[in-house]
Image (cartoon, rainbow, N blue to C red; front, top):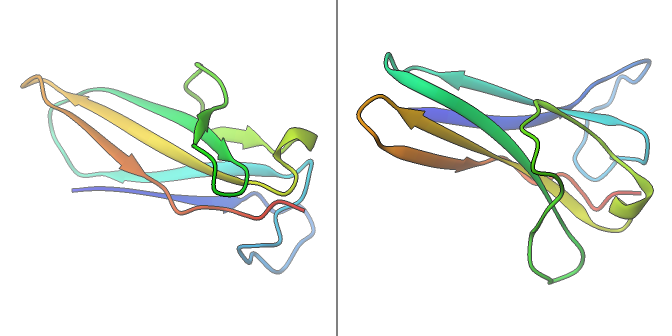
Length: 101
C-alpha cells in the first residue's frame, strides 16, 4: 500500500493549513512504503493554474519543493512513482496544496 502526503516545512509557523502556502515556503513529500521489493522511488512536482493542465515542474526527483513566484495563484502537488522488482510501476498523487499566495 502506498501513501503520499505533502506538508509545508515550518520555521516559526504554528498553523499548517492548506490554502496558506506562500512564496518561499518549502513543501516536503512524506511517504510511507510498506513493500519489500522496491527498486526505485521518484517524486515529481506538478503545478497548475486555474482549470489548466497539470505541468511537470522539473525532471528531477526530489522530496522537497520550494514555492516560487511562478506558483502564485496556482496549486502544487507531488506524484510518487514506485518501481518494484517484479516490474510493476505504481503512481500515487499527493494532496493538492494551494492556491499559493
